[in-house]
Length: 156
Image (cartoon, rainbow, N blue to C red; front, side, top):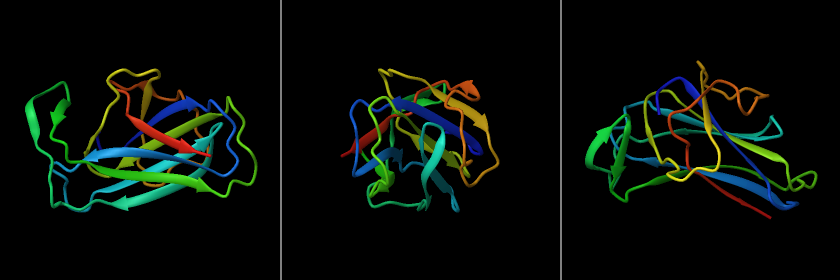
């Protein structure tokens, strides 16, 4: 993931949620530069519901390494991963099935994120000086990103 780009990926909720909703992004701890900050945003129908910021470490007990070659900015990595989450807990209102959920990622320096190899949607990329996520987002704003970010989701 390049620095100073806001990458958004959207999905539709397939059932009602009344307690919480959360999303996860996976970072491969590989060549992380000092001072790298990652912001993750969670949007409901384009409105910011939650955001988290993380300062990434430059070294991890089990760093990732590239398996084979990196081609077109995509590589296969060892199984070393770090998961970053954003969530809304104690929802004020029920989230109905069909609600559009958008997860955004912004990093101050380039990082390696897990991508979805069989995506059902696209990720979109816009230049963003950041660091904080915008309060409103159009899920398809920007250009279609070369790869779709893998976003894990959970809710109840």
